Amino acid sequence: MALLVACGAAATLGRGWLPPWSRGRIVRPALFGWAQLTMTAALVAQLVGGLLISPPDVRFVVTMSGAVVMLLATGLIGLAQRRPFSR
Image (cartoon, rainbow, N blue to C red; front, side, top):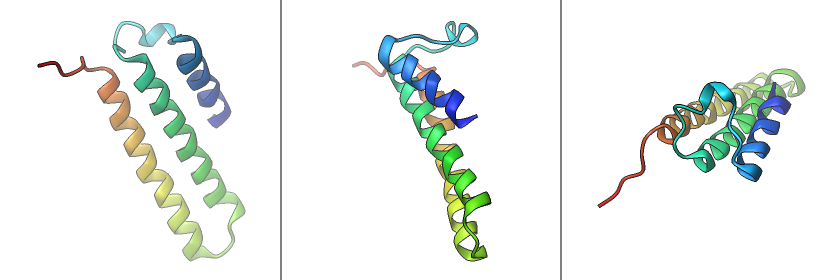
């Protein structure tokens, strides 16, 4: 899943391409691409924390930090759907 999101982020940041189901809602594609990269980092942190780290305390910290980063990515996606602030 992380690889799929990373490919979408590369397409969005490199070419400005958005998935067809997001084209009507996303008004800032660059911010959406960065949100996808942040989501990729969160998914990788949860994968590493859940499968590769054996001490339970360290596993908990890595997995929960992945959850916090995922919430941050969700907030960035929300900001990508709003019009930029102008004065």
